[in-house]
Length: 90
Figure 1 (spheres, rainbow, N blue to C red):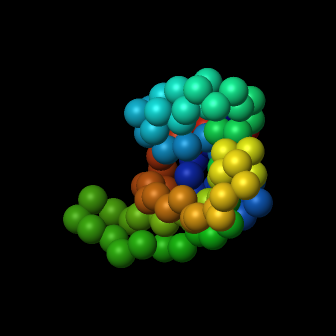
Figure 2 (cartoon, one colour):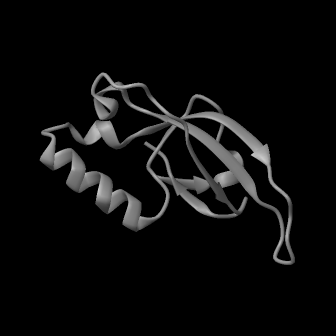
């Protein structure tokens, strides 16, 4: 299911940005024998970015799953999106 990026809320689970990132993460999951659910990102922060000539930006901060990190220290995964961007929700 896809929703507009501006409707996403903290605590929701989403798929990673960009098809290329999803493909890279899927390959890594297969190599590490991780379940598909290890791809999911949990939104931990949403802020308004500086607009440009094309409009507004939203900046998302997310956490990856504990399975993905495999016992190592987690790090935030940040990306930006236009508010109207259709986003895949889990």
